[in-house]
Image 1: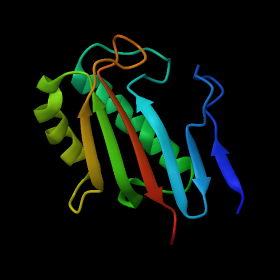
Image 2: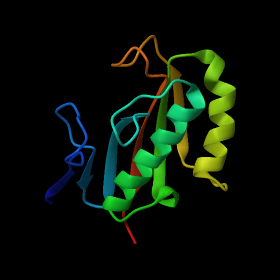
Image 3: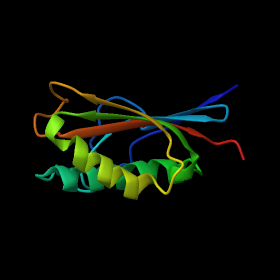
Image 4: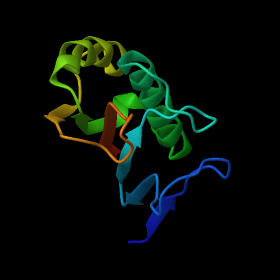
Length: 127
């Protein structure tokens, strides 16, 4: 079974990774941070969360999927105080129910000290 890789768009400065990798009917989406289209990381949790969702939707769209195809989501936060806001924003971004399975972890830090959130996911491409 061939593996298909989805690279960063040409104008996005990214570390050495694929934004997503397809293996059969599964799409593994790398951890997506809250950078905007120009590569800037806005201040504030809500703005970063909104960018994460836009970025994940772009990756899913490129692979022929959408948020309803998400099977599992892992959310990494750097502040426990953002959990309630994340839950509210998440419900709007990934709803209506049923939601994908999810794990939420609060970590000490993410690769950029200003990053407040990163989300990775697994989607089903079976139609």
